[in-house]
Amino acid sequence: MHPIIRLVNRNLTISLNMGFVIWQIIFPLIYIFVAGFAYTALIHQVPFGNKTLDYPAFIATGMIGFNIMNSTLISGIIIWNDRRHGMFEQILVGPFTRAQYILSNVYTIGIIGLVSASMITAVGYPLFFKQVEFNILTVPLVIFASITGAILFGSIASIISTRLKSSEGFNVVINTVFLFFAFVSTAFYPAQGAPPILSTAFYFNPLTYLVDVVRAGIFGYFNDLVATEMIVLGVGAVILFLIATKLLSKLEL
Amino acid sequence: MLYCIEARSLLKSYGNFTAVDGIDLRVQSGKIFGFLGPNGAGKTTTMKLLTTLIPPTGGQMNILGIDAIKSPLEVRKKIGVVLQQPSYEPTLSVEKSLEKYGMMWNVEKKIRKERVEELLSAFDLVEIRKKKNDDISIGQRRRVQVAREFMHDMELLFLDEPTVGLDPSARRGLLDYIKVKVKDGLTIFFTTHILEEAEYLCDDIAIINKGKIIAVDTPEDLKNKFGREKTIKIHISEQKNVSALLSEIQDCKIEYNSGIITVHSNKSELVLQNILQILASNHIPVEDLSVVPTSLEEIFLSVVKNSNASNNSSGQ
Image 1: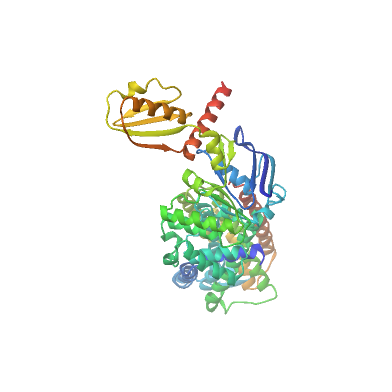
Image 2: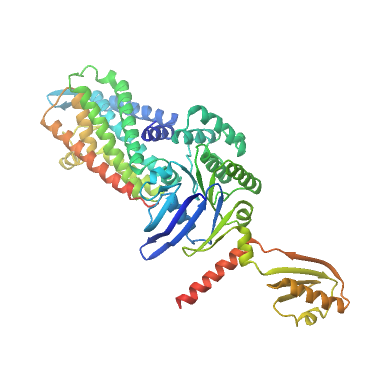
């Protein structure tokens, strides 16, 4: 078995437990069904490209992106725990290189991102199936968004985990950053209608690009803006991944 | 003679600080090599260099016939390492930790299963096999950490203070397990603070201080070289003027307290003869007499003290 596959196997075993899986499903379900229907009284319909979406359909698709981001927290947690519990050094005195360790984290978050996206798609499907417009771009767009989003947010979590030394600091920073990403984005509500400063801030947030691409795939609306968002997402993922790799490879032992 | 570790002029500096100062090391295959030194002497840094965890600033390293600077991964595939710091997966059970570690080393599933059972039993972990690493004591976790390393095949095992946190029985169990593995052909590079362990286990010993190797030999030869001074204890009935009677004897340091004469001397045989003569001529009967052999700990302290003294004088 290839060393990276062995490390991915190990990563999945140590990170996936029943609590995490339940949280990964229950948490978005609460948002989709409770917030989705509760806010319908306030936000009836949301314009999206050339069509209008019901709010539950809008939030259900937003939760796919949100869940990808949330699940990639695991990447930071794996690195953080490995450093804290001595496994980082132990792995590096084993039959592995740093590059293999880093790549195994990327594959782990890629897998978790895809599985999360699939789970929420399956769970949220009853809410948006009426407005789904499958076309040739649906699957590639959702997969692209899942993988680049997972790498991008996984890299951010990894960068944070390499820079901080105390567990309190790690938790505070990662929760603050991811809270900003979650709520200053188009995952929960549309940019249209928000105060101008806020709607501008939405576009300084990679989660906005991620959910926009997911929605473009699911609702069959692809235009120049979505193409630009894909480029931004892809370039952002590459840059952040390179930074994370550099920082990880420079971690002192 | 086959050497599985050969290091020449090995150097590791951090800015102006030199942690390992151009050391030479040769470790014979199939032996237990003890690496001793006071805190901050450079033991762990040397271990990290030899296990290729950090690159050296200078020098050469050949581990198991492989150039460890050019091909560190090839070296790591053939060695096992138990680091000084604890390392564990908090969410895994003891049993699963061993199994997953074997998987990480690409050990066949059937062999993994057999080894898990063998190691659980050898390291007295059967009762806690289902407990998570987070829920067991520090000593138990250390046992898991050491046991885990035996999940995979290796030619050379580095143990950095493996008995820290272990109770005496677990410690002896581990040392005996290591001895068995060495009989099967494994070579061990072993650092410890506990000198009795080194004496019990090691075929050869190196002492490092301030980044430099200051002595290398077998425990016996180290004692012969540095342990000329012996301690003699003579029990007599309580006497008032013993100190005065023995004060003329040369080449020794004599203490008298509550019927016990304690003598420290490099010429112990001659000194003992003189003392016994004086006691006999003064009709003082000897109740008991013992010669305390020099322990490795005394050798260690003396060698390190001499090294510090010579460093200080050369620095002035």
